[in-house]
Length: 402
Image (tube, rainbow, N blue to C red; front, side):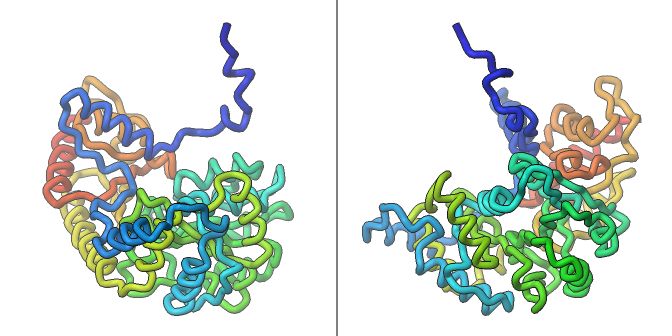
């Protein structure tokens, strides 16, 4: 006798989509396990190792006995260091009681949504968006309201579009800058326009995901929470995975109004409790150090961006912009919709990504997962040789689609 999954599983779980980035990465691994040389450009993970001085700090913490539970919102030492980082780098002013450290920035966003959304509450999500925003909002009982911009607008929705999407049910506005998947960066002036719209309403919390802050090629990172009238209307989310190449350490954090931090603390206390103690000690060291290694990684990503754009611009039919941050290219591939190479047909972005994996052995992610059905995402967190070979394969493969 066995249980019937359709009856046992919650409807919200059955309605949840699997993460497309994780799914495509797994497909790439499955193909590689069969002996196929796959170049996977699907995961959003820096290819650099964690800087040695951060690892040494973790070793030292373990030897000192940092192996016990921590306070749910994080150690005081780490929350204090985060406050200093916000003050010195972002003109954001918080007390440690306004910080909640989580098991990755993804958990920070989930905490916020679970702490604020009632069934039927609307969350405006700027698209293209990171895959998990949409599903987290749904899982928390909210209604995602997508506001989109295309490649011709550098994938950045305007303040006017946001204003037109606001209703009496709107509770959150969620976006990232630099953006995953597009690499687009909102300027200070663009954020000021959005801030004015939010401040006029007064009943909307902005969730600003700034996890790619250090991979910003504009020379300046702007935080929407730094505007005086936005300090109590913004939850700023950040972490250690991208800028410090600490993906496996699972450390993220949010900062916001005290009432929100208290609510997120309550949610997290019932689900995971605090993040790993020795990881938090290492994170203190990371924040207190200079940013030379983070900046070196940024420069490497910038060089790779330029390399990838120069190579991909030679492929007929692809429409490219010039992303100003993160480590992604998000080309419009719709010119290939309705084509076939005699074995497989491409009718949408899902088909394109699948075809490039099976025919060219290059792992990409369909833009449909990010709310942009005409695009695909390529990560350039890979070696120069892999990027050159990946583009060569893509170009050769696409020549056969007519």
